[in-house]
Length: 354
Picture (cartoon, rainbow, N blue to C red):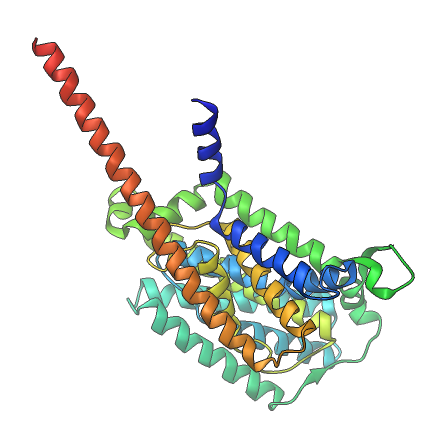
């Protein structure tokens, strides 16, 4: 392979969200004062942790040809239940696993509704979102739930601390701080990515998204793998609830509202097709970072937060257009390759005849 083709092949493997993120990041760094300070970047990365986990979960379900709209409700419900347990004297070492278990249970519930009851994923997970959000509102009585700091909640204090900080100047904005929550997020995303790339998880998800009947005929247990993906999604949503709870030292019952929409935008922006069969985990992460770059820049410019949803909606449309364009290019390239193969075969057959 000549160098040009090798470079083109390498560039094709880079998620399209990489270029979008770089353009947005460079523009924000140049145009927005204080955006490129290490303090602001540290804060932005910490704030993006929850959305990053939800975007990865959404990417997995979209690649499978499905969707999970319950994750915002699961974030709220798991966070409220964990906070409620600690408020009543339960140890954080017990409350946090309970929150993760709740996420897994809701994921299983979603998977069973989709696979056994044959309810469309959009409807099933939308209903689950309402159930989870109602449980959060009922338990909290629509009030913020907090707890008293003490030995039983020392785990929360540890998770909320910085792993390390590097002072690059006298100003607080010149201090690079890496939180334990950020490190945990990176580890979890890395584990999901490795499982996706190095096990049958990724190939089975792609197969389900491309054509469920073909996947079934090839021996893939469709029911099992759909439920597994929804369980992973539920676990990541519950982990997102933990991060939100630790960051604020309290939980509002509506903390997860609209998070599923933002996760969908980030996943689509990262190249994950709504039709399934195409996408990537790194693309979803870059999509989440792109959204938080936009949010941070708008905040520093003093733009009203109500405009954030408008911009995110526009970003979703742009992401869909880019995905459609990429899919059209792939289809054209595939058709051209198939045509060349047929011409080569015809030429060989004519040569053999002569």
